[in-house]
Image (tube, rainbow, N blue to C red; front, side):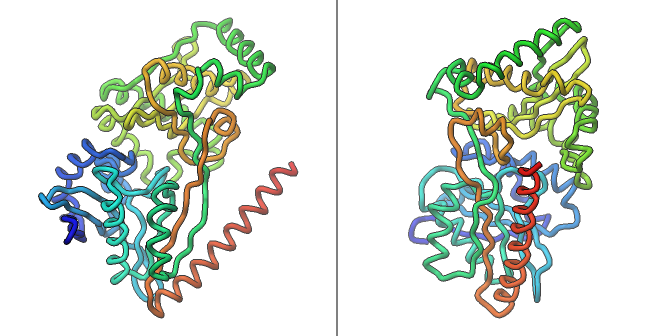
Length: 373
């Protein structure tokens, strides 16, 4: 332990429970907080979705014994053994670890911890890794070790960095005159239909009170009809009902809505992390689609975020057109699979690599068909 950091692997639900106070402390002090490994997220996921999984927790402690790095996984079946997936992978947008500060050696120790985990596991699946961690740290380390690896960009992360330009300049560059005219027209038409109100819920009591309306809009949205909504996976409805009020109580959630005559017609769910507005989900009532209620709600939150002095609106994963239009910057999000240096690891590498190639080919075909339509 020449640099003062100690890697420890903690196993099982009892091990996770013993770490909870320290995870809270790490999340409160981390210079780089992933909202999807915040303690509230992990607790809700384990309570509502992850009951059947065995946790395997990668921890790094500093010379004072303080928890300085944390990366939670769950065991999954593998060929001739077991593999690891990130804990809470259902509906997460990022899955890179928590760490206390930006010191490079701390991130290196977390990656060395992955190397240790490969002694007992045939593979480790690491989707949704942000560019800096994946490209600058993880890939060079395992390239030097000649580790069997699958490394590919997946989704794209778009974000708005405030300070580069004013909101008005951003809107002028993102929206043509015709689009701005259409937005003025649809706003006016809604106002003619009755009282138009924007509402923000950020306290635990307000979020809990609004949850039935949030569920109603999410269930009615087009995402739900196409099985891509928040509640698509088993247990996710109960997960969000447990998560959102508690996370709001920690000041990490904002739920906003556009109401017409006191009826919510659009919702936006975001995490407030480190001065960033992390947009996790939008939904709207389909009968109001012609008025673009989701777009109007987003523009309201854009202005509010700028007025509050936030640093960034992070659209997180997804290449929807509105994210491409409004984003001032973008970068890939990576999917990485690491494999054990063994016969069993090579077999898993061969099979998983084949599955990923077929999925990529099918996704490309589907995109070409959609583009032709």
